[in-house]
Length: 599
Image 1: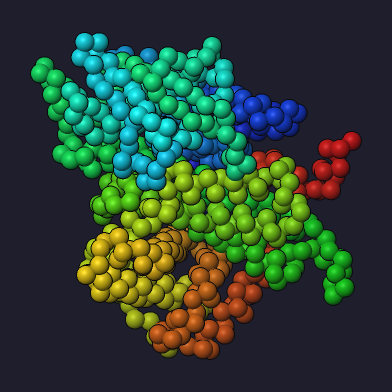
Image 2 (image 1 turned 45 degrees about the horizontal axis):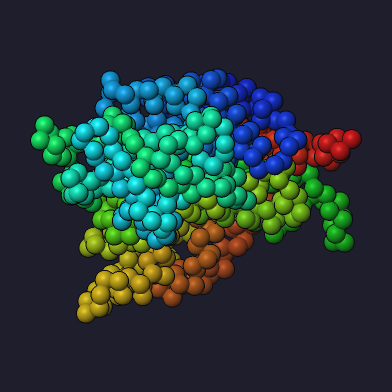
């Protein structure tokens, strides 16, 4: 039953995905650990999955299969996941959604579809923050040649963090630039630009040296344009067109709307990022759970017991597993919204960044998934000690992916501020209005915890509205700058409440019985851990009694003891067995596995 909860229809692809992602290209150690070899290996894996699964074409007609492949990629190699997300979810999807069919753009599409070229996105600029809302890279239209001339005006406007530094790998960039016609700016559009051929850098493109990252290792670099020419049809015009008089007709009616429309592929990036982060969180929890059941201790109080028998380990392991399952529920909802091409219920103003404006719920889910993966990977790494530091045991890889997604797919800091501002703009409380009473509930009931989460979120909303409103004589910058901590607290509470409600609803939708019990316990663990961290605040508001507060830890411990008995393979049904995890400490006998590797 955990399998159906986690995979939510995606398990139909497992028989196809398993042999692809457990092939020797993924399981054999790469003997040459140089960075360049690592990067080439990742691109070899991309070509492998593209050929085996036909992902480019399926992304158009069977997008659910692409999400399934990205889940597997995140577990197998976070660098591959990031590369595939950009290649398929941004570049291929950008051509399909914003390019004009039946034109020269089909050549670029064919190269990306076949894997002959790798797609990368170039949007962030080096020298200034929130550069997405004030890009300085120019694309000047030249009527005589019907081309666009791309120019980087100065060093501060160089494109930053594009994975385009590795020589010998053809790259096509999706470059965001301000469109100029006759010297007049018409807003931000994406343009396809050939950055590299197998023989070298293309004319008008300057690519710097590779900047390494320990988080997710790719060939990150700086890119500048010095008169690079872009064919007319490689302008991803999104329905905009030039008249015979060479005037622009654009379905977007403002520069802000043009930016949001041009960045609508970020829906794919947000959703894919959340899908990958949830998969990494589950894999981390599965590795740690398996190892904790095997690791024998010699402590004086209980020599010979496994570490999972210790209360501190139980709280870390099952707290992490509960977080992973909770965010899985939330991400599964986000994936369904993306597959249904759902529009955001609440349009969000672009103040700090455009990401929440594209789709507020998907942006929030990506932020929440980052927080969840970061918590799970950090706590699990600390819990298993030195083994957690080894690259072979994978957890540092997953932790790196979580750190990358603070910025990738939209900067979380800026998205949180935009989401908070959107919540304050609405006069009504964000959660259903309830006033919990200690006499009406028990902390062992998830429903009571949900009511408390709603009450706390509405309280924070009221406080933030009051504080921002009381500063009406101050500038907007000052009003938000001085209330940033409370804004963050509100968005965290908002994300927690929505996630808990989704976890509860999806658990209760399963058939009752012993197989549902672990999920019910994990849902309660997730609810109580958050409740415990804010219990004092809830007591002061009269929503929780001191007696109920004292019961939180005993009820948690009761759940932990029951979950221990579920065994080390609790997530096997979700496809996370030892072969897929590919970490020595996740093997059935980690000592033998690690010893064999040094013979």
